[in-house]
Amino acid sequence: EEEIPEDHPRYQDLLTRHRIEAGVEKGITHLQGMHAEGRGSAFDYLLGEETIPSADEAERAAAAHLLLADRPVLSINGNVAALVPGEMTALADAVDADLEVNLFNRTPDRIEAIAEHLREHGADDVKGLEADARIPNLDHKRAKVDADGIYEADVVLVPLEDGDRAEALDEMGKTEIVIDLNPLSRSPQVADVPVVDNIIRAVPTITEHARELADADETALRAIVEDFDRERALEAAEERIRSGDL
Ligand code: PTJ
Image 1 (cartoon, rainbow, N blue to C red):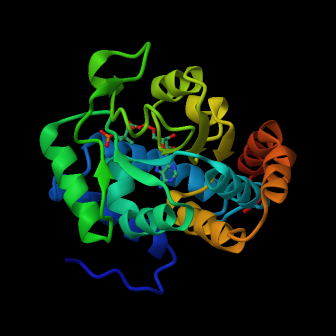
Image 2: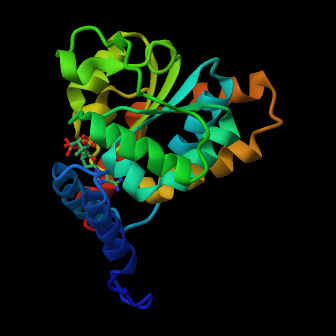
């Protein structure tokens, strides 16, 4: 493995790229995941590679939604598994959610490799292997989910999600939290909570908020959810990107 010096000005970005490459080599991440990463990295550069205040608010609202949920599920694809396997497991523990492997480019080998990778990072139960239910209005392969997982979930966290699936989940009436660095992408546009931030920063921050809110009562959590303005969050991210203010 090639060592990246920590004082390199692009350290975090290089580390991320390296993790995606390692994911591809391990059979976890799809080749298309490298393109996705490249797009994300360009938007992150324009955001100043930091969690902007509107993203932090979205992360707090996401934590409140997950704590209020009856059946929260965190969806894992090949990029998520390569970048934040331990962090997603920690979030699942903090909000008592299930992890479900849900792939755009679905193959049994990748599902198994990702489930194993998550287990190596502390997950004890990983869903997505049964795939005994379908998301309506989506082509067969991309619609596969677990009946007792995403299909039945009331709140789903879908990071780096494809637009068609985000829309189909929205039509099922689910509360959708989307993490995506591109605020103009269709998935954050249909999300109840669009989190425009790098997943590397977003997931640990949601977990921090969840731990801080662990003892909050339902009224307080509902107030956080209701105060959150999704349009405003999308606009704030777009403004930051267009401002060229780095
Ligand atoms: O593992 P699979 O088969 O489920 O495939 C997953 C990918 C991501 C390859 C697939 O869903 C895909 O092609 O996604 P897109 O259409 O490229 O969308 C990915 C979105 O995620 C883009 O809008 C990127 O800007 C964004 N993105 C990429 N890296 C990050 C990110 N957002 C947050 N954090 C990142 N690190």
